[in-house]
Length: 363
Ligand code: KG4
Ligand code: ZN
Image 1: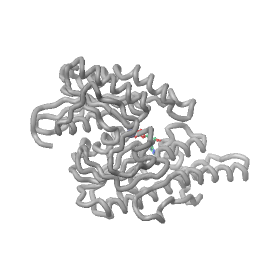
Image 2 (image 1 turned 90 degrees about the vertical axis):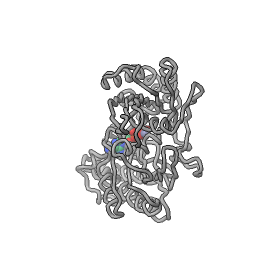
Image 3 (image 1 turned 30 degrees about the horizontal axis):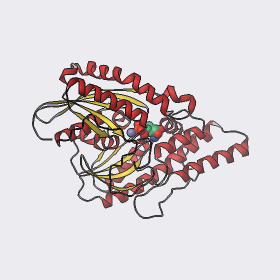
Image 4 (image 1 turned 90 degrees about the horizontal axis):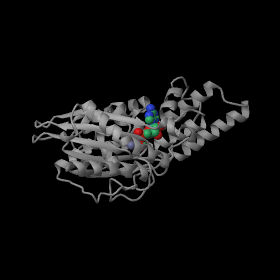
């Protein structure tokens, strides 16, 4: 990033089930300093429902946003008056949550007389490696979250080409469903990963969907159904599930997921020209088995691999402040007409697809 004036951006995120605020500073030298990043999750709020309840999520966001802003400023140790611009997730996501964030951001921008910048949540994930590792354009990004799965050729803050993605479920969704099938707590990713640690990944042979089809598109819904069938077979045969069965199924599922993501990444790397590296982001990128496999694929292709710290892989507002900063530097400004967009694809030219950001409710 080039030199210029010092800028301090407040970022807000509330598109799914995390209420987050962050303060990011760009020094006159161009150096970036993340002054604070705070996140209030809603896991316990939705626990008894087995998934995020949009109305409950929206209400909790509306209640918590002010507190998160205060906390982020306190941790950054700066007054509100020092903020130069407000960046907020304007979509895609659950409409009630996105609206809560956009309204809060509008209030702050109006009250302070400072610019407002609407940010695409997926762009936030996709630009995270620029914040954490100073990654240079263009690069390949695998965005794997609870609502999305896509390979993006990232060429600029507003310039993304989708090389492929899931045609049905997102990997995080599959992890969450598998956790539900196995009676493990939500969010499913961390529980399945933990259970898999003591499991034998070779005990069950689960499908590796779409590996026989050319290109980088993926499918995970059949894999989830195969897990359900496997569980039912075991339950019918032995009248229940033992701890070891659970671990073995989780390990076998995670291995299938790993193999598909690794092979499709290999193909995406072959398609993306002139990249400076391969990066992952999104909640599923927190998974250590997947990270290792993707790093190995990147090594094979002689391409630097970047996996941001876990806290910046899952939903957070630092990435929104970062995407807002980049848009700000390009001259982008929004005003009081900024609207919340539940659907907002990053690559407007790509054909519509489930899980690509065109239809997915979560991000
Ligand atoms: O990006 P993110 O924080 O939120 C949205 O999707 O909006 O991703 C959350 C998803 C959830 O489905 C969660 O189960 C999954 O990321 N996840 C993981 C892990 N940690 C979170 N999946 C696999 N392994 C993990 N360690
Ligand atoms: Zn996300």
